[in-house]
Image (cartoon, rainbow, N blue to C red):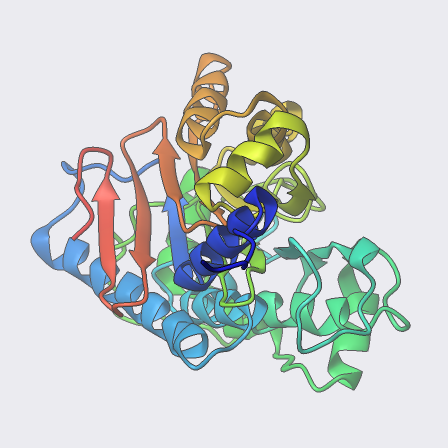
Length: 376
């Protein structure tokens, strides 16, 4: 008769947890390209397809990083940078004009924990927001560069020329403000003020663009990624609102309003239940929002979603649905993308549509635009 002792309950639970963690070493990327003003009536199959192609290109850019074992931070930035370089979106190249016919860009980055590739970053670093940028080709890349240099940029929120000066020293690409001119955005700006399309800014001319192609002149782009190390990163970028006041700051660079990411250790009965069911003791979440930013600020929408999940035990679907409904009640259109460290995704919106997409380990990017679209 064997004298070996049966494994204890604790050791069995630990084995279950370790096995489940190995099964869940997954990666996911979810993106948005703006929400609020697009309508089926104002679109055509060609215009819709252009956005779908652009969304898939952004998903592919981020997926390449994740599939090679890269960091969530780098994947999210790659996806957002692809949209910043595409005139279809209100970020980077396609940014809208303020009331004086200038571009003032914003961006942010936040992680649930420091990236494994940069162990020197303290956990308290959390993230960084940028606003009033006028020369940065890719604000999302600047946010990443400054986040990784806490000695040069020890703050959580920076603005304008000094942020760009530091970024330029770090090798980030700065451009002449004329880079951000597009005829479509200029027409939105001028017509919104009741002015004729011309004159165009010095050095700018008609491009022959279809001024009706854009369906979202107040949008934002964003990405939330989960990597194989269990880290979640949220990255958001925008040109703001068409004809916003000079110096207006929206929710995109404001931590807790338009973006959030955090992780926490479960406790009590929830921790025991997670161990029993094979779920990790640590939970993490990332959020990026788009829409009427002033309402996101008033509601602290991003952190509200995270804390409903953390403290009330709600699912990300339930928490995000409540948050966007609260926005709607106050008159704020918008949507959010939410991702947790088990790979669950929520794409909640309270308006006609939100450019959105998801890609998982199979590498198949799925996108949607209008509120009743199914991801495909």
